[in-house]
Length: 147
Length: 367
Image (cartoon, rainbow over all chains, first blue to last red; front, side):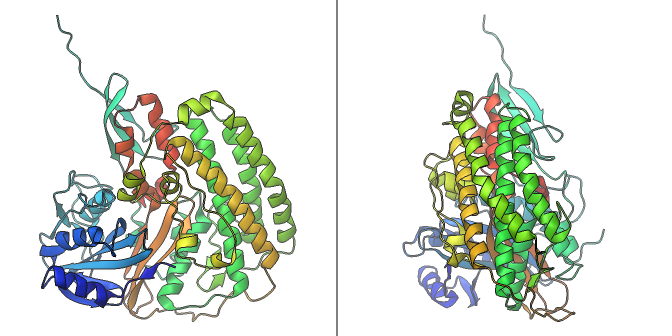
């Protein structure tokens, strides 16, 4: 059985390593400040006992006041999982650091978020639209998208 | 005098017999050797995730059929598992058994297609594929018997399945299951002793264990690289904890291993179906759920082991009848991430074999 790690316990570990990095934690999710996201992800991947070596999926939700980007991480060795989330309030130019350097599996999924939500991932090797064509206007999975 | 040489740009797809739909690659070639590959997606993008936000949870079932259309039953299964997790719905035991039987039949069918198309891509044009189709046809006949459809089944329901199987189903299933191992062994014999097949697949397109994990590869692609990771064992859903089965793994992660893993998985699926047939009892097939189905505010990620890898749905509910966010973890798209790495440095003749061994369905890649 894949164990969904207690979010508060993971948040405590993260706070010890990067004070002030978590915003809140609940259920199976820890909310991280976007500035410290890449450090936290790298910590989760490399720290023994956590070893989140597998980025299961990466997606986003538009809550209209903000975007929530969700990283579902799994450790294949320990068979446990956690959701790492981050909130982006800037709708004009939402930016996050790319996780491709940690998990190459993030490549197409980050491009998908760029294509459909307009979230820019800095440091991504090939940040451009994936499904829609280059001249396409708007980002369809945003709630305010009008055809 | 020094001869000036230039790289050559080759376009493969979207209309190409080996691109499994409308996938397109732009290959940069230096002579016969691939220097770079850029995949081009989107020819089958229908915006299903957006469309799903405008329809109710049960209406969205039909979209799942149209994602990976070679494995509609398992898509149905992943979706109902996720919605049931979101809303906390219990499922009657008989319905769970029926789901397992359908999902494993679908896995056999999808793997038959994967192996058949791989051989097609290797140049054994159509003949082996049509043998695989012969067996797949029998599985489709069974699905037809159950739900009247051969491709887009729309069979599972939130809290159960749409209808119980007819009386003649279980005897027909038994006949099929008794005959299948013989056919699969026959294909194995024909192909494993075929020198061309071995030379074309062994040590071709090798994906190391570390890279497979880093690329978030899933399903047979991950297991062929030697990672024993199967959601049916790692995080059992439905009734999978009740069945005895093995998780076949490869050692090198080459095209041959991916092919072997799929063949071995078919045998395991047959064993699971046999056990399910012994255990299944008459009973209810559907939990009553309210006609206006509104899961409480919250989110859930449910996942299953699909034929192509981990298939999951991340659903966010705002308490209304329609999902607020409906995201699918597409194993086909994520498995493709490793393709560029696999193709760089190999000869153009191997490109289609490597691509075929990943086994994608463009309906799921583009969504």
